Amino acid sequence: MKQKSLNSKGVKVVLVALLMGALSCKEAPKEQPKDVGTPEVSMKATEPFFKLSLAQWSMHKMVREDGVDPYTFAEKAKNWGFTGLEYVSALYYKELEAANFSKEAMASFVEKCNAESKKHGMQNVLIMIDGQGDLATPDAQKRKKAVENHYKWVDAAADMGCHAIRVNLSGSKVPDEWVASSVDGLTQLATYAKYKNIEVLVENHGGLSSNAVMLAEVMTKVNMDNCGTLPDFGNFCIERSKDGCAQEYDIYKGISELMPHALAVSAKSYNFDAEGNETKLDYPRILKIVKDAGYTGFIGVEYEGSVLSEEQGIIATRDLLIKAGKELN
Image (cartoon, rainbow, N blue to C red):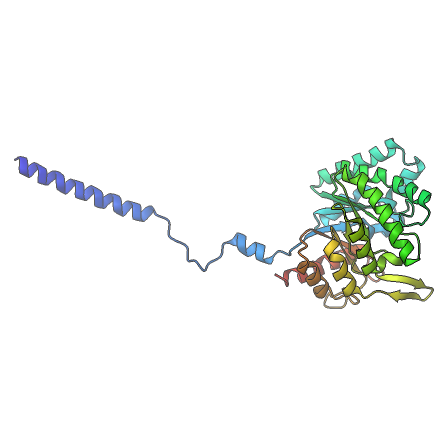
């Protein structure tokens, strides 16, 4: 009886073990083939290497000619498929100048912009500053005044959560004088901005600032982490005449020279062919230069054409950027 009982128990143990093994095999997840990518990886492979922002200058005609409220910027940019906002100070000067740029007026500007960007889930990227004085003038007193005029915009950018302001290096037309004045003006401004955690960016924006090798020299001499360039794809006209551009710097050479110092990038556009390509600028070639420089931040769409409407031009530029960017993956 004892031996029989042991045999019986042994059989039961074997049966239970076999049953548990079968169940565990049934419940175990099947191993995925190693050559099948997950949807997340596939999605990342099709995304461009940059993020999309909209430069508010793309809608300056809407604001100045059609009476569109500049504070609808966040809503419109969101509807057009952007995630970042690049404000243009001049589009708010009507109300700010009327109040003599008072602290109250600047605080109101910041409050309204923040409310709209938050409402629409947008990121405030930078503010483009114009008309606040010549940072590259050889007159030291005027240069200092221009630097101080930018302080309020550094403060506003910080209060809005932007990473930078874009400035211009207008002033002297004498190369050596322009370089020296630019270095001094930028160093003063970037020193103030550093304590606000704001970057000061210079766009190639006409005059000697469109001479890329000279602007790069200025950046090297300033040598501050929070001072850099904002390469614009199209602004390389050094000298203009009544018939157009009299002296233009090589666009692709210029972008290549400015990208090592770039902390933001501006995608200028004017007109498009039937296939959606920019007629003056080789976007795939330019984006390769940008990517090869290791840039992965925001690229701001800045449409300045006259054939398409501003909205059509913004969308055409956006689509071309996305298409050209994906082709580089």
